[in-house]
Image (tube, rainbow, N blue to C red; front, side, top):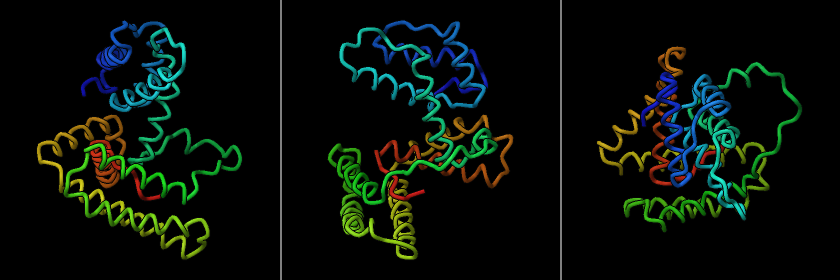
Length: 238
């Protein structure tokens, strides 16, 4: 996908074109406040693919509302794009300068409980297989992973200390196994395309990253694209 943040004009045109398609052809110009909004995304280094996922999230939410008549505007998408950008940065291991420098504003909100996380993972694995995104080569692995997660879910809420850590380590191992299967299942041309997409997503950050950090971020970006391709959940808990 062209139009990465380094070329502001191309980036704006790509965002404009994408939102126009999501608005079923209604023309939305990136001018005035909309231009300021998109320029701020580019300045932060938001990859175009990430911006488009944020736009998708916003448009889908607006479409779900009753009596919606007007096409979505760029400014409506700002919060969703920045949320998806934060999620992407965490996934590939790129910290936000603002979050690193800002003082803590109080206790962190509690995340999803471990049993709820496991239930959601099982449901997504089942949906991915039912939806046809996974080939038959995944069946045995999915059955085994789902059985392990179902068993873990029954006791996860009461686990503490070493027992909980052991479960978290096992979830990380299962996640790695699922990604290994995904890499083995995808053809070389599609994998090479994902690697190029990962390069493009990270281009705005590469100059300031040590070689080892970039390699880890690139690997994480490819894994995220693999998850998208096969509609795989993240089993591991950060």
